[in-house]
Length: 269
Image (cartoon, rainbow, N blue to C red):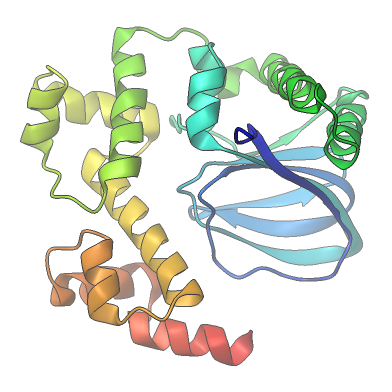
């Protein structure tokens, strides 16, 4: 049976607060009650009832509940299938584009938004041969509603350069464990390296090098907390040039060494 575009949908009401983490999937949260403080890639928001939160597959994030009961739908999406299934580049860019002023947390005035989540949830609970097709249609409907409610938050026109930057991001997402240099990317995607760097930052909000570091660190976080690989093995699997570079880079972002982060995670789990 083929993989599903929507990998999972949950309705959560527990009081769990989540430390810094990331997912391999795209994630959409819809808050149905309560409030929480949410940090996504160092941007901080107060998410409240009726808000939608869009989180890319390489964006670390955490939540702190401010007003219980904190209830929300959590919908996760397979990035590879999403890029293949969603023909519209503006919709794809909703999880990749991070231009100046981008907001991850958006109020949704449309009364029917919760109904869309309920329909996706029902399809996932009562699967038949048409369930995945219906889920995909509801997902497209949801994304269009979000885009229409906040057009200025997203790319309204996708030119050839913007489309190429999306392709480069996807390439970095899947080749982060290899040596990736700006001049190599420029040659591979037929762009001047200075123009590539400028365009990437305009579209994604950070430079190609920063994006690559972010991807590598997020994979390192996952391996530190979900595997028994040694620090040296994680360094190699995440594409860092050497162990000293890995430790220095990790500490500059998380104020802890990889070993300390892992130890603290398991102590407080």
